[in-house]
Amino acid sequence: MLGKLGKIILPEICRSNPFFFAAILTLSFPGCNRVADSDIRDDEDCNLVQEYGPQGVIEIKTETVVTGLEVPWSIAFLPNGDALVTEREGRLRLVTGIYNDPRLVPQPVATLEVGPSSEGGLMGIELHPDFIKNRLFYLVVTVLREEDMINRIERWELSEDGTTARQESIIYDEIRAGNIHNGGRIKFGPDGMLYAGTGEAGDPDLSQDPESPNGKLLRLTPEGEIPNDNPRSGSPVLISGIRNTQGWDWPDENDAATFWLVDHGPSGEMGRFGHDQVYVARAGDNLGWPDVYGCEVMEGFRAPVHVWEPAVPPGGAAIYRGDAIPEWEGDLIIGTLRSRHLHRIVIEDGLTREHEVYLEEDYGRLREVIMGGDGELYITTSNCDGRGTCPDEQDMIIRVTR
Image (cartoon, rainbow, N blue to C red):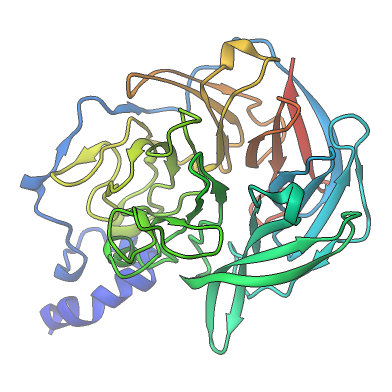
């Protein structure tokens, strides 16, 4: 009877409620087994660290730009020096004069109805490459469609004065949403294509399902079509085997093929915890979730270059390309949530050469990390998301400079 329970009932439990499995680690159920251990090895070039990292020694300072936000998830800097900011609860906000005289406009630019999800809502935002001409921008939003939650990419048009916006079209709506692991970041790449990070929505099997857009990095045209030169004809999938990415960037601004990408490690699935990762990945790669994790690698999977054994996990990530902190030039800067700090990683020749911690516990949970149009680094806090301590001034945007 127990064998039948393990083979038939428990595989679904493992997929839908991985924390159940973590509570019964001493039992072995075939439906939750991984690939054969003999096929897995530890990658010798992967930098596995047992603590978050040494304290950073490079001098920096921070400036509070605006307060009064509720879970600001993503920022888009407008050509006129203003900025649009998404709040996860469904509000699109305008910050005027963000570089010199910032002011958060009380009235939202738009209010969207979002589906019930603890990690979904209004998430990524990105401007169209020809925004100056067409005033178009993109949003990732969780919505309830009939009885199913989905994450979809919508295209919007901003009014000339920047105070209102209207939905122009829905360009992609095939992404399953869940209470956890919704991804949500979007960016235009050096090739003019739209890249979207998705999570596996709490179902690890989707990451390895080539027919599912979940647990992937997607590549679409600005109209939401599938580019002819994607790795698999007719598929939006560029990179698979992802658990829940919210950040990546391109080390070469003229080359869209190589990414520095961060991903969340497990939080109980199959008895595994922590091990958040940084990858040097290329189009067509499979990062291995859920078959491998941490520094493990097997044939056909891309191994990470950096892994934190204790849970970080990473939020947004950007390569520093400013003048204020020249020592950071070309390095990957990552916002972290649970570990509440800003992380700098130096990657050279595809390997981690150095890493260090800044702003530890200074501002709490950090979500967005992005270079502004002024060449400065901007980050957002995420302390009002139900997993932090929401202060009286609520969440904020912070400039990191010298």
